[in-house]
Amino acid sequence: MKISSQTLQVLKNFASINPNLLVKPGSVLSTISTNKNIFAKATVTEQFPASFAIYDMQQFLGVISIFDDPDFTFGENSVIVSSEGRSVEYVYANQEMVVAPSEGVAEKIAVKDPEITFDLTSQGLNEVIKATAILQLDKINVVSKGGTVSVVVADPKNPSSNKFSLKVNGTSTADLAMAFAAENLKLIAGDYKVNISSNGVSSFKNDKLNLEYFVAADVKQKKA
Image (cartoon, rainbow, N blue to C red; front, side):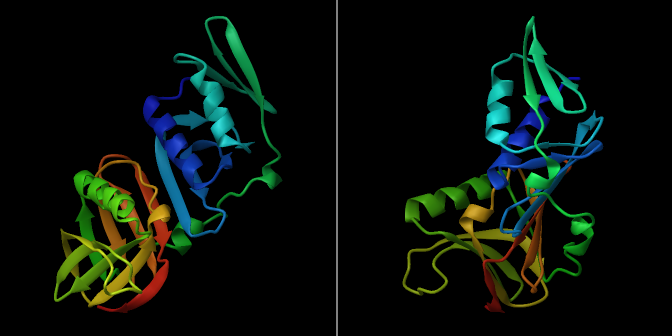
């Protein structure tokens, strides 16, 4: 079995959310942060044959990087990664030792009737992340006021802090200000459709990949 570069990109991204990964039979991959405030799921082209757990995803990805376009043979207790006469047998972890999403979590946290909906382009996302680093701020705020939606990098507790603001194409049914920890927006580069509910749950759906993130607000909503 081969694993595409696109799926490897998803695996690398998921490893930044949670160092563990539980793979279930089929084509859906999902992960959840240890704090349970980030959940991500992706539907990939591969069909994984059975359940298995990886405890240290960075190590597993490092093993894969040894090879050029390797084959994967998934067994009962381990996966063999091989190419041109070379191979590594990587033993699975005990599934009870890894942090993984519970059954039905996607349905439980689905964003229904969002108060804020907007498009976040790849360029916009890059600018926002860059602004957090340059301004040394750790909060990304989504502000809707009078029907206008903006993504603002600023300290919500300090009105005199430096501020970066990006007006986005969106709609809102309420004047709200929601703050997210910048470190929680661990998104693969791309364009996203964003939905935010006043209860503090948000979804970021990639426009090209079958990939979606659910992120909890770091600061509870307030009127903008």
